[in-house]
Length: 323
Image (cartoon, rainbow, N blue to C red):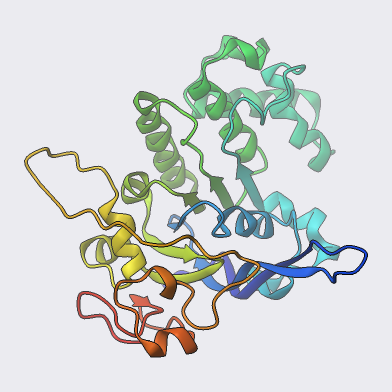
């Protein structure tokens, strides 16, 4: 089996918030211990509600923020702060907003060449321009787009430019933070198909962050479901969508729109409010909203096992192994 490009073990990120003259600051655990591996040519999707820690995870993987605890390996070597400048060329990110991620004062050609100017000073101006024009064609844009400004493009075209910029340094890992959520539905499929095609051609490892399970079903190979900063279920796409183990995953899937109007499914409505990440319940964090909760769930935190398809649940659905 191919070795992973990136491996994370017990990855955590905490923030100190609040406080004041007579009050000590509190700890917000945005990510509370996550394990995963990214492989060449494969996509790992991370899904969950807003505020579950998905974007914080993206910032750690792209070395924008340093983990509070845990280890992150790139090509088998630890990622440490002193090496960030050299390692960032191997990990790039595509942001959610195609309108805010591009400099409106720069032409497209300059936007694409800028990463090479900073990280490849040995390249000549001619070589940079040739590579930028080549990359523009790879993402489905025309040669005349090279000298235009971002405001002259549609949202889908801007996201293609952002993808091209992320690939200019030939990265091994591409983090996709909600890359199509800001686009029209008619444009989403074309951008997703582009990402799949580029992955096959360049053998990229994708970390795909999304709250849209219908999109995840189209692109993912493996899926991690997050809740309040922790992984509550992980497995292959087909296994997880066919038979979810964790009640939270089952509730998420029940809210996904059904394309076939002749098919019906039961919508699971969760009771109660999402707990604050500043006051995560002692036992299972999903216990206050779970319809299967028992006394054990309120006192003991379940953990993910090493099985291929596993859930952090004492009373899993669909024949899953209890945590």
